[in-house]
Length: 253
Image (cartoon, rainbow, N blue to C red; front, side, top):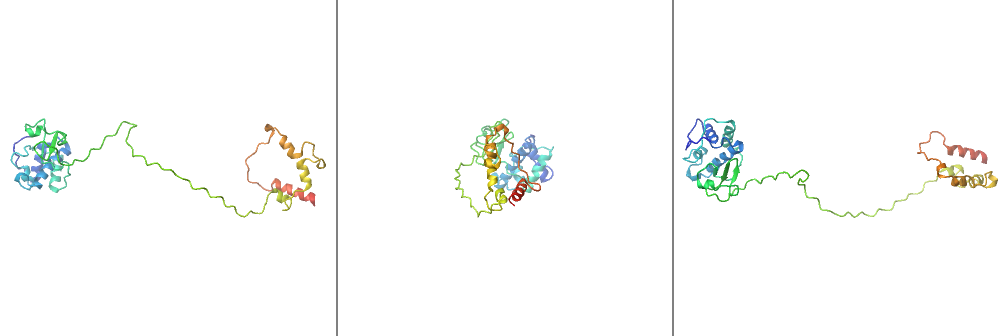
């Protein structure tokens, strides 16, 4: 910061404002420059101490802003343009004063701290010169992320019990005419021929052995002897049922 006491005009109004911002907060970064410009705007908006309602009236008031530098940086010039055009963001609230407690000799400046002022860079901004709590509402800081695995998440939704509605009984439609193997073998009479029954049950007159016929033989088979059921596939051409039906019809003819 280049201290010159009371600054003076330096070229145009824009250059004068930029030179004061550079001298007051040239090393405080963009936000630090904007905060100082915010104080100039706040003072001008209320004619602080009767110095006037213009930006330069307040910036050039005696013994108020005491820094000024001819080496104007691009950020200081940018902030000066924002101040003049009315596009300066509000970063210092209603602050009318600021100071660096470690560099100032004023007693009120040494009382400034994070409890009663808004700290931006090395400067503390306040709306009074008595070091009492700052009345401006500064934006609430965003809490830092917690350790990995302990991040904050949204609160879980309230639990609820879901009562399932009773399942309606399946609607049974009218039965379609049976078109199975037995129906095809008997011509729709649903009664197998006696010869076929004798073969299945193993009656002597059917020529079967005394082991109970085909059904008995199947029941007596050991598990390892049982035929493996293969996945059903779509029939290709005449099926076994077709051949068997044809055979039975030829025997009964």
